[in-house]
Length: 248
Image: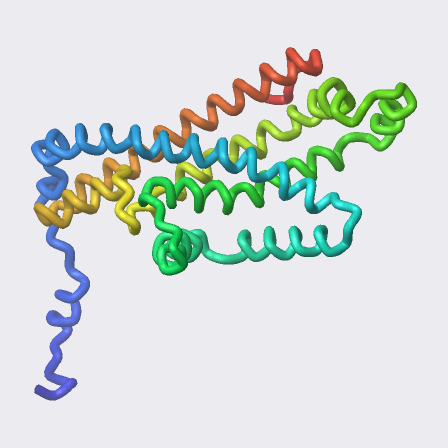
């Protein structure tokens, strides 16, 4: 058949979509898959919260290394953090899951996922810590030094209480980002929401309902997390600093 014989009607058929009303979104499928997704949501929340806690911890040594007086340590920590932030998270997940076993380090999929998310976002948390410290006026540190505070007491009683209100919004946004990155773990068989949705689609060739519901669940999680962060920010500002935020 010549190229010219390819009729206009045939060209239009390539882009045609046969929807048949709303039959493509079936409530019977929703009733079947929704309980599975809600159960898997527990795995997603568990992974995200543990990864966030891990990132909060990992961010501390990265910050300490970056503020070290030794140039080699400082430059190494900056290079490592920049490298991790500049490479795809999926690549890092594959590295921990496929490469590390070849050197004798084998971790379960869910542990691998938590580790990858923790290290990746730990670099962002370290930046948040650094920005919070730099936002503190230099006079505050001079004052605690003049008053004879030890470094531990200075951070505990003066520095940390003042930088926490600066950290809450940033850390809250990172928590939301971690939630939205968890679907990547489906690629290494972590049974989160996305894994269950894709498994149902593959088993029954029904992708529209589970993927749509998956998006709705993530929307609810993100909105709920954002609301919680705003309330926490307001509470921290009122209790710790005795003032109200601009959120009203």
